[in-house]
Image (cartoon, rainbow, N blue to C red; front, side, top):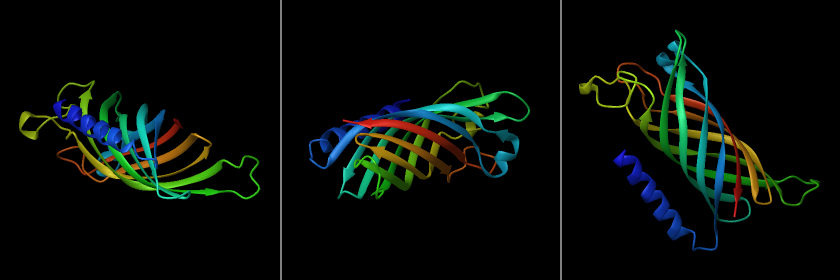
Length: 194
């Protein structure tokens, strides 16, 4: 848990210092996701629903291109094909490059289509499961590693200060010590900038 608090503190302090600059905007987002596992690990699991909440910053280089870091609380895990769910909760920091473009003839001049992609790093800090379906070291008999690193890609739209996003995230690190396979999820997010 100390590592999650440290990650959150670094993200908040960085965001607070950056928000004083004119090109930064910030806001909140939230939504639902469907998560499971890839690779060999995915053979034993199916998708399960979850939620996510985020504190979002957007640094605009110009009207079309921005960098969008977030502090994301993510409900992950998967549904066992043999029955029952595994629910893991992560703190993630995605940093997406976002391209925004207008549609000619749109009724609202503030309407923009978003295309984004980028890496994320995360750490799992809580599980509703007992060993071995909890985070910890292999030496302690735990099956899952808390560290998560991967890539995001998605599309969305922005009207004024409000936005919608559809996002796919694919983990590049194995979530289980003895099997190949990472986190993967599809998410729908609604948010608003201030």
